[in-house]
Length: 76
Image (cartoon, rainbow, N blue to C red; front, side, top):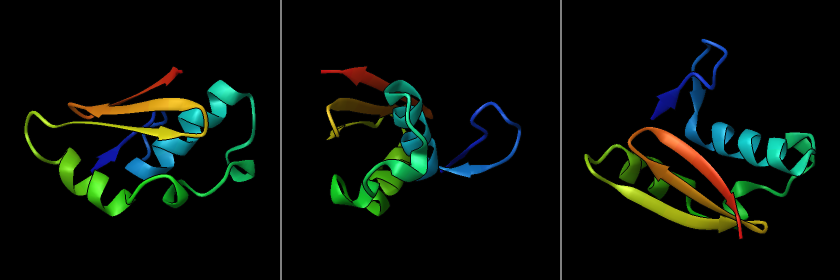
């Protein structure tokens, strides 16, 4: 799954998730732990391509929701 993250440039779902969490955290994405420590990102990317899929998981102290091509980060 690719999105543009508002820049017009394609980016991976994993990059989009980490960048959104970093933005909420007020941190640089490079300073966050690897997303792979929280979730199998290959599985998330495969599932995200399934019509009607809604994927939820925790990363740091946030609930990440991937649904209909959109990534939402909620504080828990």
